[in-house]
Length: 114
Length: 112
Image (cartoon, rainbow over all chains, first blue to last red; front, side):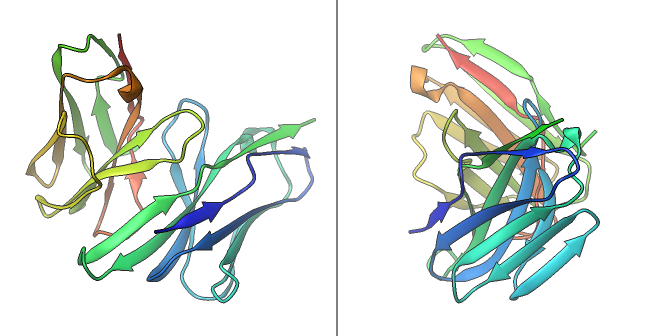
């Protein structure tokens, strides 16, 4: 089985930096995804890490440490439109299933305040 | 426009009704997925189709019946649902299984 933990809610100020953590326990780990979901909308893909280290994409960066079962999403220069839920998802390979499976965490609801 | 279109956006049905959810993707992807999203719970993977063949069924009750006639279309047939089945049902697609997924806007289902 898999266990994915991330904080339920976070609040940060416009213009600031916020780090959203995600820890996981899984076998057959094969990558970690971050998605953004605004209320009432579809999740949208933000980033993907399969090797240790930092992946940077504009204001968003994602970090992975496979040995620690840990990832974080870093959002810089926060804007009001960044208020959303951020979903951490772990991809794992199951030999029995013969395919990959993506398991999502419960998501972190980020509120950006003026 | 996400490239993945789901209809209807909202559905209210009684427990004895039969209805179907439809998903269509215009991205040329080969893998399609059904997820259930309930309040306070993580996204739950229900079914995975790869090149029209079902590869995953995550212990979903038989009152949910998927159908994938081709790589662009995915249906979820519903019958004799329970109140706890009320949720947002999301369809997603990806070029291949395991790659980043594009999600539709979902169907908000309410069971009376």
